[in-house]
Amino acid sequence: MDAIVSGVVEVDLDAGCVWLSDPDGARYPVVWPARTWVQSDPFGITVGPGGVVRPGDHVEGGGGYISADRATRRLRLEPFPAECVHVGTAAVFNADSPIDITPGVGLEVAETLVDRFSLPEPIGLELMAVNPDAPSVAVIDFVSGTVHQYDPGRYHGPTDTIDGASGGGGFIHLWSQGTIYSYPGQLDSEPLVYQPDPLRQTPSGTSTLVVVPAPDGAHTWLVQPGVGKDPTLVELVNLVGLRVTRIMSTGLEGTWQPIGTTNDGLVLVTDSPGPTTRLVSIDGAVRTDLDGTALSVGWNGAAIRRPDGSLIVTDARLGNPSRVDRPGTGVWVSVGGPLVSGTSPPAPTATDHFLVMLAREPELGVFSAGELMVVNPAGHASSIYELSHRSHIASWSRSEDWVVVVDDSSVTLVHIDDGSIKPLGAIVPDSHWVLAAD
Image (cartoon, rainbow, N blue to C red):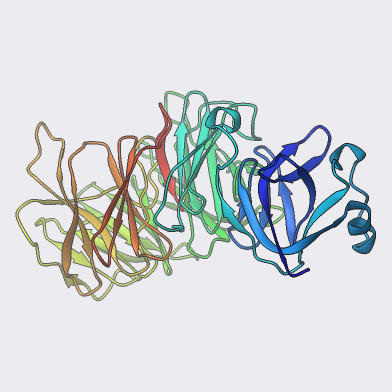
């Protein structure tokens, strides 16, 4: 079993067949490596960390071609269905073989509902885009270079308007009318469903719930901003286990909006009576109040605009502030925030560096253009990209070497080390807003 096994993946779900086809059109049923499992809706085969094989992909790995009957007997597997065995031979990967995947070689976009784009390298990041009225969700995966669109009825999820989305720790959270749908990975598995109690609604009847994943990937903050004289409600829950566990619940006087989480707690902001940033710890205690508005939050700190317009960076407890030297004229503004409900898109920062915008003076109150800046923990800011549209977000890749910039529906990659720019084009589906990045 020291040969190369390769081919284009073909699937007949009704018959239960998965083949590798060669250039001559011969089809071979497949025995995949160990620790392989199947996803559904959309169909996919997970092979090792981060590798998902889909119909039309070309795959290659170590193994051999042997009798289909012998392959199943030797490995104590159920025999292949008769309709799957065309030439009497099976393609068998070695149990420990890595699989090289080239997406989209054998299928057209219309056949798969998957748009594919060319990446300079696999980039650890997913964007979640939502058409809130359909409701449909698109997952833009920068590891595989794919866009998977989940239309109504193609996934287990909200049937009403989607109020928001978030990602974190490998999970996707959707919420609708105060109900949270939490998915481990893509939306092709049964979600964990939870609704806070009490659930606060606006006078129009819509939920005010905002969902903020914690850095550990296991816990989730639920925030319902105060309305009128009612306080802001904050819960910390575990949404990953087989049941929901409430860790903490508290109320905060006033109207507070969540911006993100550090390793030490939840970061919230308010404008009344003046701009203030607050850190709430996992036990519900208010640890820090600072004058100013958090623009960007990472696991190890935050970038905060002070009332005088200056920018500081802090540690995870909002302490040890360092002033950021302004490299030009303009106003410090956010490029999203780790999680913002509605049509304001989120943009997680790296663990130590922050993405902010040095915007030109506003026209009619709207900051239309400016420089995308990277700010390091020492307070040094450098420009990496010119933002020219009113609808834009920016997010780090997981390895922190790429920044993904979204202008309306167009996506551009910016490499931090060499400054190279890779336009990917309009890959966000029509009528979808990017609401989360993981």
